[in-house]
Length: 389
Image (cartoon, rainbow, N blue to C red; front, side, top):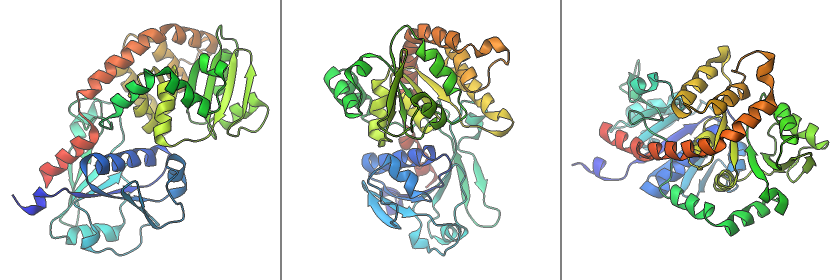
C-alpha cells in the first residue's frame, strides 16, 4: 500500500454562507469533528466570518488566516486568485454546490495525485436522494471527477452529522437537574421560567409567530419561550413592547418571552436538551434537534414554487406517521396546511400538539435509535473518500 493511502488525508471545505448560520454551522461541525475525532488536517474557506463568529466566538472576523480549535480557517474573498497544486488537499468539499474558484480547480487538475472532489448536498428525506448519493460527475474539460455526497435518513445515504460522544454528553446533562438548572440560570431565566413548560424558538421571519404567541398566552400552564436575538424580531418586539435585545423579557397571560443572546454551538445543543419542545429551522438546528431527545417542529427553508413543502412532507412521512397533530401543526407552521379558515385555529392546533407530545417524545427516541444505525456522516464520508483514493 502506498504512503498516499496509509497516511491520514488532508481536507478542504469551501463554504458560502447563504442561510446566515445553517451553512457555516454544518461546515464547522463537520470540520471540527474530522479534526478532533479523525485527526484530519482541515482547511475551512468561509466567505462570511462575521456570521461564523456568532456561533464560534473564537473566530476573528478580520483575519485572513487563523487556526480555530485546530482547524485552519481562511477568508474566501471571491473567485479570483491563483493557486498551486501543493495548496490542494487530498479531499476537497464544495458545500451545497458552491462554485470553487476556477484557479483552485485548475490546481486540483495539476496535482500529481488527483484529490477526491465531493459536492456535499443538502439534507432531504425524498426517495431520489438514495439514487443520487455517490454519483460521479466528470469535469467537461479537466481530468477530474466530482462525486455527490448526500446526508440522509437511510443506510443508502451518508447519514447525519453526529459527534462520537454526543449521546453520552446529552444523557449526563439531562439526568442532572442541578446542571440543567444552572445552565438555564446562566441564560438569565428565573426559577419560575425554569419550572415552566420551556420552548426554544428558532424560525424564519415568515413563520406565524404572532398567532402562536396568542395561543400560548391563553395556555392552561405557564410557558417560557426562549428565542435567540434577531429571530422573529417583529413578532417578538410587538410582544415585548420594546426592542428585542438579548436579556429582554415580558410576561402576558401564561406566556413569558425571553430573548437570548446567540450562543456557541455547544450551548445551543444544551438549550435544545433543556427545553420540552424545540422549534428549529433549516438544516443544522434541525439535525441537532433530532439528537436532542425532545419533540421538535421544523421550519423548512423557503424555495420557489413551494418545493420546500414537498421536502417537508417527505420528512413527515418518514418521521411522523401516526402523529396526526404534529403533522397538522408542522404543515400549518410552514404554510403548507389547508387554506380553510378553520385550519388557522392556532389554539386548537397547539392544544392538539401539546396533548400528543408524550407520544412524540417516544417517536423522537425511537427515531434517534434508527438514525444511529446509519453511522455518523463524518466517518461515512471519510470511508467513501478512501474508497475513491
